[in-house]
Image (tube, rainbow, N blue to C red; front, side, top):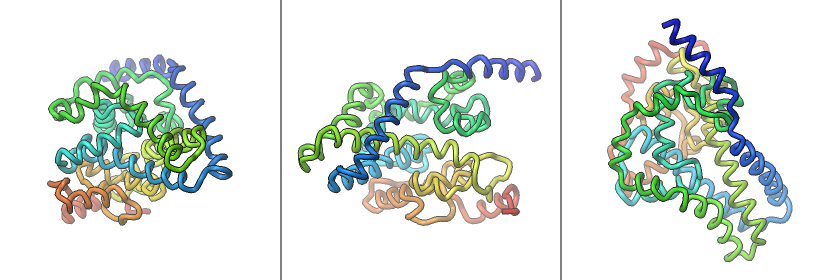
Length: 306
């Protein structure tokens, strides 16, 4: 046991310094350009372009929350083929890796939360859990444990595997080219302004909204369901991440399609989206926690000091 811990700590030190310079440069460029885009938003961008960019960004976010996270990673509900295709399309536009990789890493995160096997281990600090984990090589434990996961459900999903096969071709086009053409063609927006606002700025905002769940919601907030873990309930993250910030609840009951006990559609847009899909028959078998199970868990491990 002591030897394993020593080896693990040594590996952590060795690999923590292996910077992925390609990612450092790309993220630096993206953030610099997004600052220029923010200036354009405040000054010369047409209002129709802004409405399109905001609406498109909000919609594509469902590809991460309702799709990659609640449908594919946790199997909180089932979806018919049209919804799976739609969510896969939205997730592709977010440019956050193929579903297969996103789900694999997220399942490892839940199984080994805040350990060396967690891709964005919050015990390594805010910056690392927010975006630093993308700037260095993965800890060996992340890779080792990821290979042990059963991903047969993904491998049997034709939508996931189609995306995985063609991701490098279709994702950049859908995320960084097509959105810019719409305001340029329909609203007579300047093409560069359209690109930096609807592509780059939208992408950066989506990234930080997703990253906040890994960082902010693992540091600040209360723990009414399990006081012994780092994930917290954070309303600010829930607003920007469509309901993903009720994180203490989610780590205790990861299979609940709502990812929350309380709150409403205003702080959980993904639940609203899934409920809408259920009403039209595209989503079904929605899983949730019984009031009695919830009460017992809160009494047993909840933090009653908050």
